[in-house]
Amino acid sequence: MRLFAILLFILLSVGCTLTKQPAAPLPIPLKPTLKSETYQLTYQTELSLPKVKSVQLPAHDVSRNQTVFIATDKASVTDKLLEQISDSLTEKHLIVSEKKNSDYILTIHQLDLNFIDDTNYVLVKPKTPYPLFDTVAKQYPTQQCATLFAKVSMRLTHTASGDVVWFAQSSIDSASFHQEPIVFKFSQEQRITNELEVVTFIHQQNTEEARLARAELTEQVKVPEYKTLSKLSNLTKVQGPCNRTEISALTPMMQYYLSSILIDKIKVQ
Image 1 (spheres, rainbow, N blue to C red):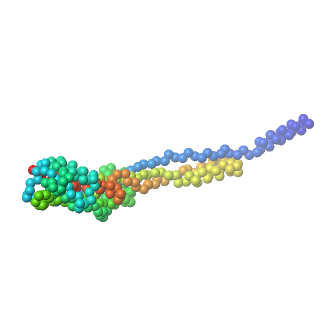
Image 2 (tube, rainbow, N blue to C red):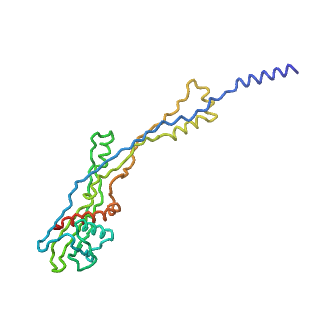
Image 3 (cartoon, helix red, strand yellow):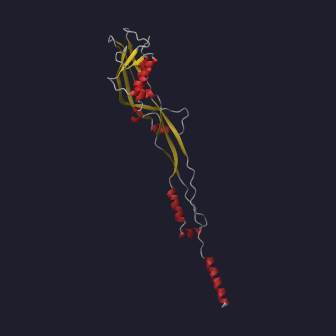
């Protein structure tokens, strides 16, 4: 009986020794550090000075501390613009009055705003171009932005005589008004293109059958390396008004700018 037990122990030991031991599971390799860099593109356009025409007639001298009534029945004037025009007249040492029988009547004839053809902005080459610049420049050489054309005209009439003593007109387009370059940014990002291939290979090699097969190999299984690809993002605007909503928001400032230019042309004795 004791002999049988010894023989059984020996047989079991030999069986365990002869049983194949599977290779260790393969770990999923660490992903490489992916790079991401951001660049800017600056676009500019030709700018124009405001067009101004001002004529003052010598029939009546406009003197300090004379009163002026602002007539707004010919144009839609906001309360804010009316306040700004009043402040401009005050700076000229004229007194703004609510009475129509003031010394003079300042009539606002035009406050025109119209969208015209889009403005073409051209890409500006930096002093030290980055490696990607030429590639991106071919893809995005220009940008088009909505453009407003604003025109303001006024007339100053001597109330007692009805004589027109001054009339003026000014105009400007929105691109020349805000004068900012349009700036866009984009990124170059690295992405792994074969992550699924690598993970699938690892899972396949970690099955029991594959591990037993690998145990018999003299060389280690080579895990596929991660492959990366650099990709450019779309352009994102970061500076300057361009679309119609952004350009329309310039309306109050453009009207004030043109109005202040005109009132500054009134010669006050």
